[in-house]
Amino acid sequence: MPDVIAVVPQPAVLDRTGDAPFLFTDATTVVVDGRPDLIGIAVLAADLLGRVSGRAVEVRYAEAGVSDIVRLRLVESLPAGDEAYRVVARNGRVDLEARTPAGLVRAIVTLRQLIVTAPGGVLRVPAVRIEDWPRYAWRGLSIDVARHFVTVPDLKVVIGLMSHYKLNVLHLHLTDDQGWRLHVPSRPLLTRLSSSTSVGGDPGGFYSPEDFADIVAYGAVRGVRVVPEVDVPGHVNAATHAYGELTPSGEPTEAYTGIEVGFSRLHADLPATGPFLTDVFADVAAMTPGEYVHIGGDEVLTMEADEYATFVAAASAAVRAAGKKVVGWQEIAHTPLEPGTVVQYWDTRVDPAPFVEAAQAGALLLMSPGSKAYLDMKYDASTELGLEWAGHIELRDAYDWEPSTLIEGVPAASVIGVEAALWTETLRNLPELLQMLLPRLAAVAEVAWSSPERRDWDGFRGRISQHAALWDRLGLAWYPSPQVDWTR
Ligand code: ACM
Image 1 (cartoon, rainbow, N blue to C red):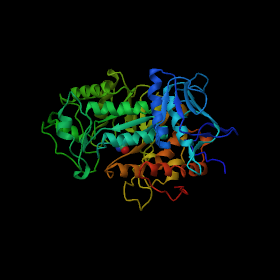
Image 2 (image 1 turned 90 degrees about the vertical axis):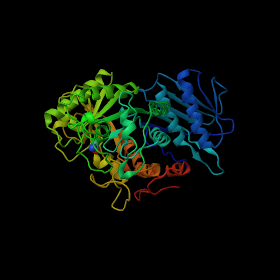
Image 3 (image 1 turned 90 degrees about the horizontal axis):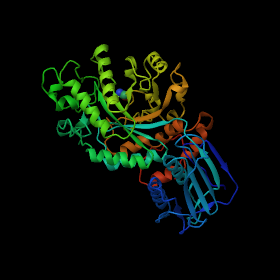
Image 4 (image 1 turned 30 degrees about the vertical axis):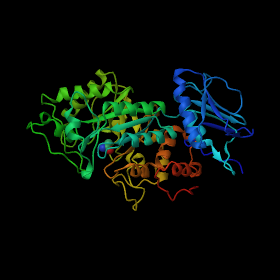
């Protein structure tokens, strides 16, 4: 029986070459040129391969013979794009090639997915030649760490999983009514007074600047960049609880641990508001090496349109003054936007005309349709965790959709990418997060990475069925969707 090739997302080009397979031996080493930007990648490769093979894999910094090697190399001869890569596996060696270190990360996880355990426990890689590159530049996962806090070690597990499925943006929803999760040096009371709460009275928590730097660095090595979100001008009870000067009475609001939305707000006419926005976004931007900062902007149910537009403009100006580009939830499309602003589409129940107009005026659209990509929705009526306001999302629902035609009238070139979202009103710990992410995160990742002509449900179903063995080996919780014949 030929070896299974169960790469998810489906690569652009994959050929079986007919050579003999590559076999891991005790002598297999990772070989790389000793360039500073490649050493971290080589160590990552050795670490991942070591964990698959159950023994330490060495890294060598020169051509150490031509056999028994996994060779990492930067090359120019690949399709354009920073993340394009090539994997050529055959008897004796595997060549992983890319134009950039980020591309090599994609090659490494592809290799990891190609490894099969043959009878007798021998690990082998079928002889293949893969050339691959992403459809969309933005392939994200948004995690709400405000309703329930997610610790740094747990977040690292999620980042590892994202990298395994070639996702490249971790969007952290850091602030909401129930808690403030990132220490902001200019406003220390935000975390001092508003980080210990969570939904339902569960424990809270927050990231120090050092924690945040650790998350950013862990992601960077794995090809995942961080987009922080500070949600304004609604979803701000944690801020108004910490700073009474942000309320008309001057009194702080009560802490909130329920799951209603839309009741809290900032006030544009208070003297403390402008400096709050400027300072907070400047501090968050200063901690963020990535290009983007998210300003929220969703579900502001108690504000006139003019004041809302003033807030979007002020928050956007603060982000741009700090040298970053702006992302906001779809509601910001109701206000004038600078070209290049990213509008994150989420609520499919509303009139799409403003999104078409925003795209025509130069905004970019990030597709997170609640009915497909909100992975906190229940799989079906019997799912214990999760919400159902956007419907049930079985695995096939998360897979079978097309981002470029989702909003009629939006030009395909205005779609910057796809982002799954995980809201945590009902999710309290890592197993609960993973139960909702797996297997659906892999489905959304394939929507974001693979071209439409390379995607098909039956193919995905067959390939993803092979992934549960790794999830089990890593101790990751997952949902055994009845739509797949799982191989365990
Ligand atoms: C959202 O789900 N309120 C963006």
